[in-house]
Length: 288
Length: 284
Image (tube, rainbow over the protein chains, first blue to last red):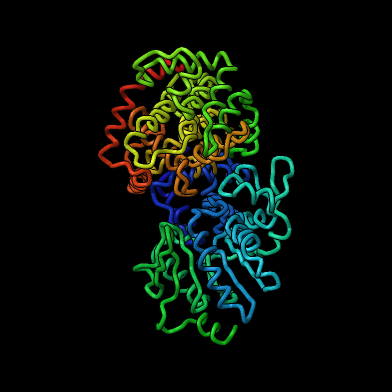
């Protein structure tokens, strides 16, 4: 049975409040399709019953399950190719040169879903930057969903998932096949630390980063939320740090304290020079 | 919820391709295609020889004189088309079946697939750079995943996908991704891998809706083929009600990559239309 307008509005508002994700009115089909399995797991037959239960319980695990179900976890290895080319050819070489005295590299992947992006970065570092052996490399990967983080930590992917963007030589080199699944080798898995983090809640203490991946995240938020997230990143990005966004995302007219650096078929962002430094800039000057 | 493991298993249960077809695919994928080797493979397969001769003498290749041997037919058709024809013998019957979940009647999908392959054959004349040899086969097989995926779609799920396209304004493969967490291109790629086809064909099939994700010539060529085929021979739900700016931008980028002018798209569509019926009859 389709959800009525009041129930749809209630669900949209619940998801917005808890995750910042904006679900348009045209997404009714998606809410019904993704929430029916949630209802069934809880012993209900319809999404209407699910909304009724949500209204009674207000928050808690059921609301978490609804937000989880409505979060898009689409991801793939080396997504869009070109940002990773930029990372390999210019961003990492320049960053490594700048950080050689301290031999530390800190990277953050926001909304990492099941881990394909941070693992792509780990594999790239292992494959192309052997000079980083002995460095302190920290890749922090965060997401709001406990469930996807659990899957990310396990590092086990189906044939369909490894088919998404992973070059065959890397599959052979860094994964072990086990039946119909592929398990990432510990040497790559151990390079990434996964942590639960909701971007719209108060941000916990975090290290200062050299490189931040926040790709295909902002598209789900309204402008004030985008501004808050971009501002938060700036506070935690070193003065010469780099931010990668998704192909359909930009800082333009949202946070003009970033400048866009085009590179071949992609681009990345740096904090503009000369603007008052955030905590990131101050921390960077103090050598962290 | 769709069980992905079951979909993977179903893809892997597809009947294997004959050794001659796999051999042809490997030969065509090489940078230096050796026609002599292809002639050898065709000559050893009487059924394939017959099919190749029929197509070489049909309107598909606009013959001025008839050809009588496998050698002449291969030379006239070219390596890419011979592979496509050999593939059509194997997949034609499967891809001709009706697929209710995708609103496809008998023959719709196969006709659309042939239109896609023809789009590259016709489009070659208008392209400054040509297409990869294997793109013809990738175009022919680009929707093979629908045959597998449809087995798992009940009427309610199919209806949700329809609503995604009509109410949500997303493209069909996006609706599949939203609702099923995979799309038919990915399932088709599983089949192509199971068949040990060259990686470039796998990529063309997997990314015919998302060429920019891998940004390879074969993904863009298969994308172009599908877009032309949708214009000429729309197949069920794949036909969009309206074209989004993103979709148009992707198409323009693909045209630019092959040096095809926007105005020539109409000529390519006309060329495909004029030959589609004959070719469809010839390979069905």
